[in-house]
Image 1: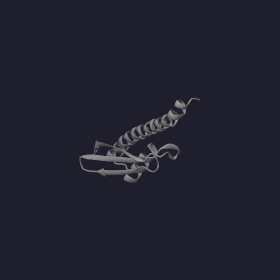
Image 2 (image 1 turned 60 degrees about the vertical axis):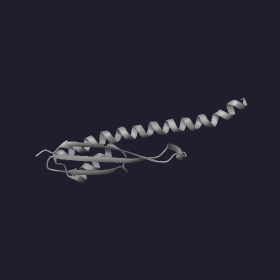
Image 3 (image 1 turned 90 degrees about the horizontal axis):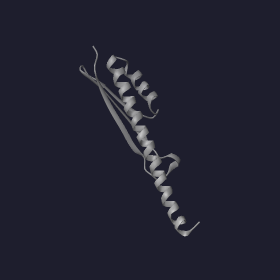
Image 4 (image 1 turned 180 degrees about the vertical axis):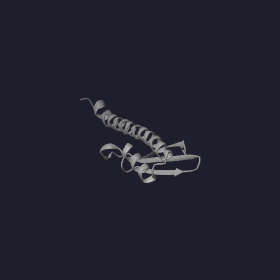
Length: 106
């Protein structure tokens, strides 16, 4: 191994770790979008709010924060999760969230 390769290798490892963390965050974001949609449809149908929260958590991570508000016209669901880098890398955790709404059924 040359000295140039030895000098560049740590930087490549950091770039690889950042790329993997980004993929993990995007995956969590997509899970939040899907879970929010599922929760909004269930809440708009009149499902009990505790059941809606459990349904949303089963569609994403169990530590997800779920907010449900049901009004006479619209039902809103917001889902948020904290994404931590795999392996405890030196990157901070970030919060990803998504929200969805549906017309409340009468």
